[in-house]
Image (cartoon, rainbow, N blue to C red):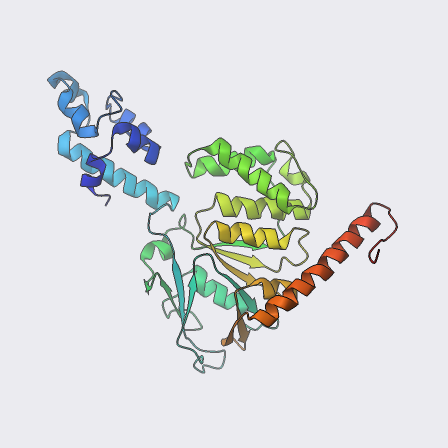
Length: 336
């Protein structure tokens, strides 16, 4: 439960600023929203006996109820103040029941890890283990630790507190809303502060990623595949509370992949990227190689591979320029 002592020290204005949803709770309890420069107890003690009788809950008990309400709302919204700074994978078994040949893999907040392996190798199973914070109870027998400890039940049982947000290559909207309306709906559902600034930032970042820009009033059902993925990446980075992001094969997504990854890790997310694309694989800090259901190797990117990545980016930029020229009916100038 939220410490009563910590709440006692906050003025009413600070309390509402930090937990915006508390204002409606106070109104429901008939608590007077006056002298917002004072704490809740200071306001309570200055009330007349008649005013105190109007309040549904009294004195110290009232502060306990406020604390419990904040705790429940944080659970509901997935906003607990304990974030994920470290994700750890403890070894399980391959598809034949053989022990994986590693003890523990630690992944830190702000790190990009590529998942590599042939189709059917077990990448999806690893991601499922992470998403549900497996505790030796999945087919692989792996255990997932959060911040060095066994995952608290909220990561496993609370549907609103998702450990993983997934971004796939195929993303289609079915809601008849504008981009702005869609983003406000998401921001309001999470009771985020500064909604207007956040929505504006998401649209700006999405247009920075997309090959072709769109406006706030564009209907989300009219967005192209690249625009849809750009919007969801920006939305996930800025509005989502999920600390771990799975990107599933976005090599052909029609977005600026490097900017997308920079945006996600800039928001202190852990990024797990299943890919077959060599450029994306080399953008990752480390690569997990999976085969026959087991993690068979963990490779850290070295300086030579950073050089290869620079060369690949030059080639990719030239190809992107060539595609654009052909798309708009121009003569190719690739080698000019």
